[in-house]
Image (cartoon, rainbow, N blue to C red; front, top):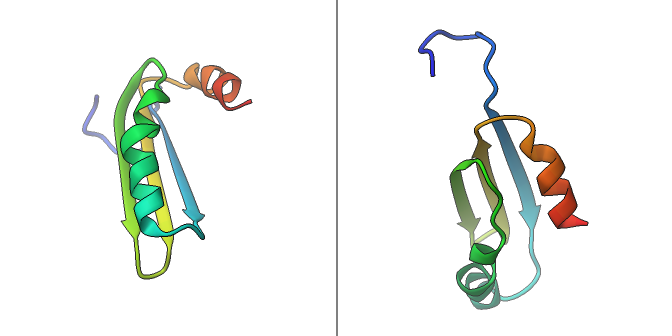
Length: 77
């Protein structure tokens, strides 16, 4: 990957922000048991941040190229 800013590349980053109502223990169990089973090819980075005080979560996913969006949509539907 080039170190130059604003150059065209095929990397796609998806940021998902959400809130939750369940107890944080339930959320952590889901992350540990279920989230790892949702995999797609070309995933180069996956991070999940929990804000327990505000009951919010942020997921950051980075993929090698934009072609992956079709595969993600198919798995979600």
